[in-house]
Image (cartoon, rainbow, N blue to C red; front, side):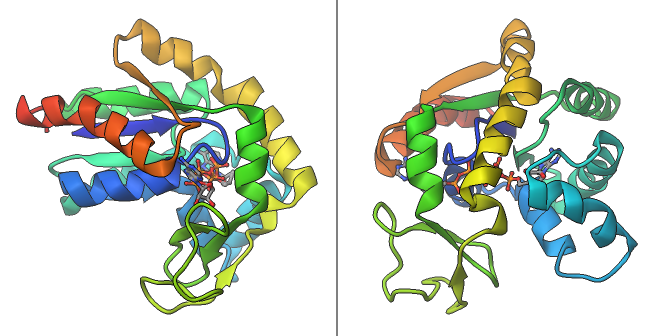
Length: 221
Ligand code: AP5
């Protein structure tokens, strides 16, 4: 299955993408995680993308598209992938279409996690991430077993730089202006599947499986 996950910051894309990856055996490709890894380095690319990521702006399309093109052509993507956080602009969506068309591998579905702004603020202000493996937690809704420690790898849990209130506001504005128009783009192509992302994690997961199980059984992989 070749999937994309759409939704505003904090909609739960990373949380649900990790489950989709485990259950359907396709790699979870998060452009946000890729950029956060790049920022740990001290090279030309890190210097280029830092100002965008830390202020909540989008990294220029040409940089993101090349990273995604290289990533989805690796051998582990032969059975498909789940893209989390890409595409985010119309040029990125068109570039993805061109890549998939050239490969003869059409997009299976675009899952849209719909959430209210109130939900976003509540989730991002209490989110914690593992600085080592990037696993995602929430202090109230999805807490780690031991406070401050990642269940998966024992790494330290930290707050993301871009989860500060003023940056969240900017990310939401950027989402509304540049990414929301993609909903119509994928609706017109008949691949948009809407999910109510305001519900608890398990309920959202159940709804996603109801959409994906039939696609997996039909062999849309
Ligand atoms: P990115 O990392 O992609 O950030 P985002 O899209 O803003 O999404 P988030 O990671 O904030 O939220 P999420 O939807 O994954 O929610 P999560 O599962 O963590 O991008 C960061 C930056 O990188 C961008 O600003 C940009 O600069 C750059 N970038 C990335 N991609 C780019 C692109 N394509 N083009 C240009 N630039 C790009 O959940 C949030 C919290 O809620 C967690 O604490 C979680 O535990 C909790 N939670 C999740 N689901 C539920 C639920 N159902 N109920 C209760 N709590 C829940």
